[in-house]
Length: 482
Image (cartoon, rainbow, N blue to C red):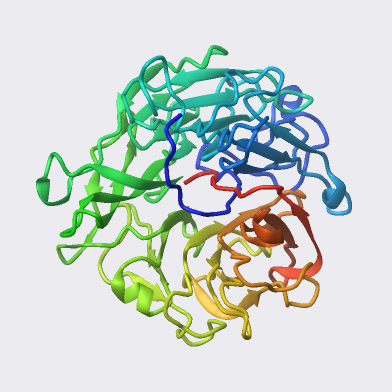
């Protein structure tokens, strides 16, 4: 496969729950397939606990550099989570289609849903660097099937365009409201249900809107997120993507935020979100969730890249949901100089490099985890931190905000230069108690080997008490639901 320069990152992968999926407050104790209960978006073995996936596209497999891997950490009771089963899969694993090759980047993106409607969630893994026949870097999606013993067996969806890099961005949702889960990529929509060959019912192009109407703008570095911003029960899609080259051909162009409303016929035409006619910056990451419990998901954008946000150390921008979709007038902007937000806004900190949304305290309001991977901790550069801001009746609040580093009491490890703690953040209830865990990735841990930390959810908010860590053995680079 062709060698490419990839963004050095760590991300822990968890699926975002969309409107068609009901997340119970606790595990049923029986497989969803047997009980007839709603299927959790990321419960691969049907035991009622959400599972966590880490994609490691840079990992070498049998000497093949950048072949890639994914590791699944299965959910369990609070007391058993630390020692719960983990499963690592590559394209050389039994039952996984294909074979490990140099720069396939298997695990560059991941997402999950019950694609074949058998009662078990399935895992979709992107390999954007994979060649298909004589077409270099056309990319593939590998669907790994869930079952009573977890993931086993799989099918492949193949890209068709030279350098099309199918699988560089993924998310799932029910975008046509038919009760079947669909898969969105940055170029193609695959509408379910899926057969065990990996074939969807139908496909459609996903066309991002060109900047300033330029048909040849081109797109790169796309992030995807799904949720229900307009409260109609059909999943919507938000994409953050760079449009074309900048004034200097070696620099990226404008980063845009694009909105696709879900309808009975599937996703609508892309709309570039603007404030007073000025396109909103698409940011570095995007997540959706209902911060004020009004039935409409907010759009949370982490923006660290443009010159203004970079100088401020990064910002997050919140667009409220409404019956008409995201409200774009006067979006709320938060940085580390906002009163009540821990830390201080310093150039290049990366506040918002990663964002994730979920309810960490079971109060009915989604909360926001914000990665600050390049923050200096004391005198240690690029050690990294994570800030958790809570949702409430009036939306996002800095009241009760918390900051975590590897020097926080109870968090395993010690801050070191270039750990990049917080390059990945995800909020997921892996214990089934309604108080979501905060999962943090740091690609520079252990000299670049990578690490993952799990902090507990609690009624008072995220806590380091009872937290634990495990080594990933490699850099991780994929995110569920983006």
